[in-house]
Image (cartoon, rainbow, N blue to C red; front, side, top):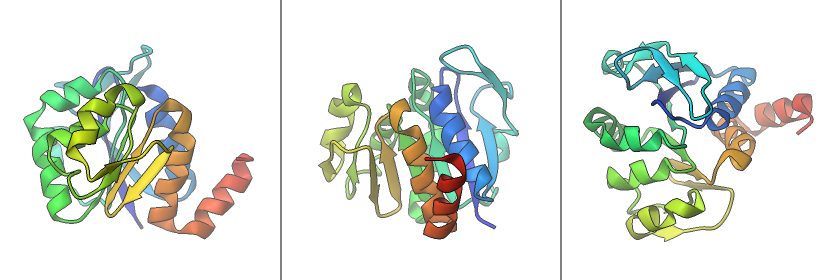
Length: 182
């Protein structure tokens, strides 16, 4: 069974977490969440609080196939974390899939793992992403090697289905789409 790990920081965009999480779950992907805060409770940008499964300090040897970073104002908290940067670099070196949506691609840029990849992001963060990637694209979702990026809350479902296709296959993704009337 494929596994994914979502990193959550206070201020995360709820839809960019919930939509991909739900789609992956419906497709049979095992999911874990990790808080980068001192507590497991993490509050999103619209004051919805979720309780993460783990704290970032507990995931050092946790196996996962996909690392997901939701965007939103909480992206600045991801940027400030040296542990997040270290995890991104290690995951990239191990050729694990890394996905970031909205403002979160700038965290990948900061970790210097976009240089050989095409990418997209929320338009306002383009100046923080474009100089650090191979090519910037104005499309909803970009898959470039092991890196998957997306534009924002409005592309969260498409992003989720893309992630599901990569982890569970096109047939599983198509089945979940059909059941959801997507």
